[in-house]
Amino acid sequence: MAIVGAGPTGVYTLAGMLAAAPSALSVDIFEKGACAGPGMPYSPDMNAPCMLSNIASRELPPVVTSLNDWLRSLDMSDLSGLGLAPGLISDEAFYPRVALGAYFTAQMAALIAQGRRQGHRIELHLRHAVTDVRPREAGIEVSWTFPGGTSGAVFADVVLATGHRWPDSVEEGGVMLQSPWPAEKIARLPEERIGVLGSSLSAIDVAVTVASARGRFAEAGGALRYEAQQGRGGFRLSLMSRKGLLPEADYWYELPLPELRRLAAIAGEATARSDGTLLERAYGAFLDDFHDADPDWLAALGGADLPRDEFAAAYFAPRLAADPFDWARKNLAVAERTVAEKRPTPWRSALLRAHELFEGLVPRLTDAELEAFHDTLKPVFTDSYACVPHASIRRLLALHEAGVLEVIRLGSDSRLVDGPGGPAVEYGGRRAEFEIVVDARGQRPMTLADLGFPSLAEGDLLSGPLRFDEFVLPLRSSSPGRIHCVALPALLRRHPFVQGLVNASEMGGATAGAILRAMRETGH
Image (cartoon, rainbow, N blue to C red; front, top):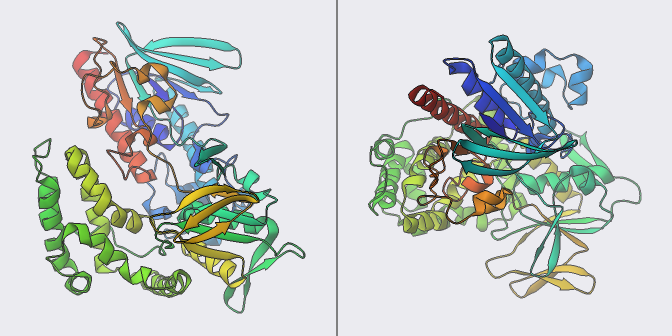
């Protein structure tokens, strides 16, 4: 088999294969970069130590060893290089992205060593860029380039585990937008008026990286303050989004999450496809379960009869009515208190569990239901799941208090324009002008054709609609080979929540299980 992409999803796929392989495996892993394990989101080449991950250490699925056990095995100098110290290691900690990248690099090395000791053939091909994946009569042909030339081979199973793709810049509305990565380039930006599209963790990372290059964050009087370097405090950062909201601070919840009996029953139905009523039935069960979990919260929202197309508006209304920094300050205080007390908030825990259940339901929806879900419920689940480390909120507040950060609510009628002094954003009869605009709105959904494998862009490749059932492409070809697509950008439309490391672990495990079952059934 071949694994294309050696980031976290590739790591978890290999781990799943080794955990249950009935016989000796032959695995080739292709990585276009110089390092296996971290992928783009956690690569030291793309991230700065000030950029934090948004997954608590207790949530990260272990590979060979747990994240905290691995960190505790490092010496002081190694920890310091990752922006950590022994006293910062805990189950509730949010670590720098580069620390998670180093962890996955170590875990990939440990998996390969373990697999070879068990008699498996595992070859890691670094600086090998796969250029095409094509079904053939003998299997799936993979072509690649490497520093010494080009080559190819045929495999029974090919796992597409390529992840995020970030061009250096993109054009939108005639305006060139800067990529938020690599962090080193963001830190070197000379411009003083910097607009940032987005207000989630990626946008926060941009703001913190720019500010850290021009000053420092320091504790003063029990609060975090931002101090610009002499002569470098004249810059202005503007985070811009349609709602103009900041993400909320990460909250405490117990594992396992509370069960939502009615919604879980619908999610567990054996029916593979919706008959057009699944979304509405699931929403009704969702409201009934929330009435049991936190009736006061649901009543304040609008009650158990709240129509689905009004749910998101009711959910966001209190925050939209407040100043985003005032809300962030109060929300942070509550989050810090509940985390210190390890006291869950019932509606938040229930919403996180509902997110998990809807994650399994969404691929079964009809196309019309899928559109309705994206328009109504998805923004709520995305917001709940996108909470950020407390340190990130503290840094935003410090930047705002220093007078260098603002949040702009664009509304639904904004547009980018190219002005005489640089790019500008027009919104609600107003105009914000910048010297540069950074696009930090996150990974956009992509098609198979966007992945960079020409044969997958051919219209007659597939035998049916691309729904990614079990992440296996439905090939029209009579090839005995199988293509397993766990490339996150290509999954986002049908699987809108597959963006975290927990998802990477689940998809890697599911893909490994499918390959091993097929190997037992076919004998290859």
